[in-house]
Image (cartoon, rainbow, N blue to C red; front, side, top):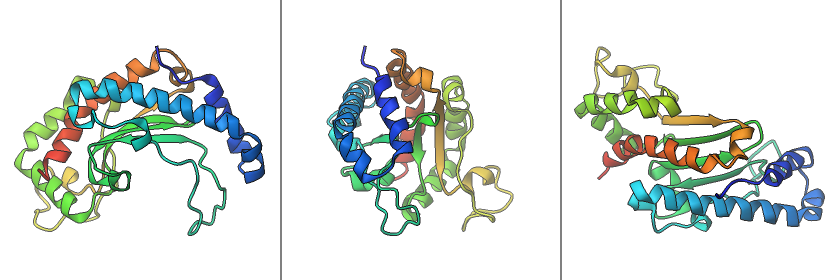
Length: 223
């Protein structure tokens, strides 16, 4: 069974305590081993997801895993490295377009690992389309959110909201709270013990299978 090594987590813990280029260069082999461990897991996870979502079957980990190097040009925090490993698997054509499609996000960070999906601050055209899809198919969307499997792994969806009603929708719309959302996010927090266990691949597969109808609804809005 493919799993995340405890040594990968230990590397991330040590990196957080030593986030500088000299330490990183001295520990480059540990980083490369951790990255390879994560890539192997992501490839196994993509194979599992593609069974119920064929749209991502042609992707590999190298297409989805984020760089560990931070862009510090416009940040007050000049720490050169991310202290987490992350990947976003979606049907978007390019990694630079990850926020153009709902997909499957995995974030590995000691004490803060999670599985997530949905639409994060979608651009205005997509956001307008999502709102229209919810307006036209409100019962279907509410059924997706109320599904026992979705509830088990993700509970309620989250996202920043407008302070007023979006243009074109009355304040007394029955789904105004959903329509006011600017992001539509679902997340599943994962304790360290789970992430480094042999159960994590099964857990991630089941969570993302429960997420699939939610992602599919959001993506359908632009099709």
